[in-house]
Length: 109
Image (tube, rainbow, N blue to C red; front, side, top):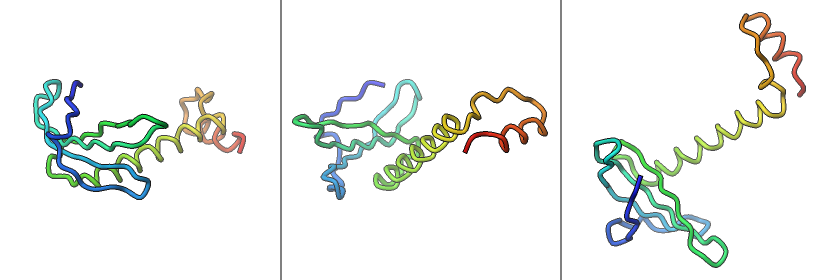
């Protein structure tokens, strides 16, 4: 997705506790063929400014709510990644319910 990140197109929502400036706006996504809510957090990355593009198809969603949703989503994904990586569940290839149950109970904890 290509987005012009000129801040004149976005409205400011202030700063978070770690000096992250938050901007949001509504843009048209040609790949989704609809308007989307775009949240642009800008942060210091060493001596440069970094940013991320977070979006939702719910154009009425508050910017801070969208940030909380993304934060929760990544915490959940890291939990699943760590669970698969450190418990050996990635190596399970069983199809029967009983065999999967045995693999989970026998996995390293």
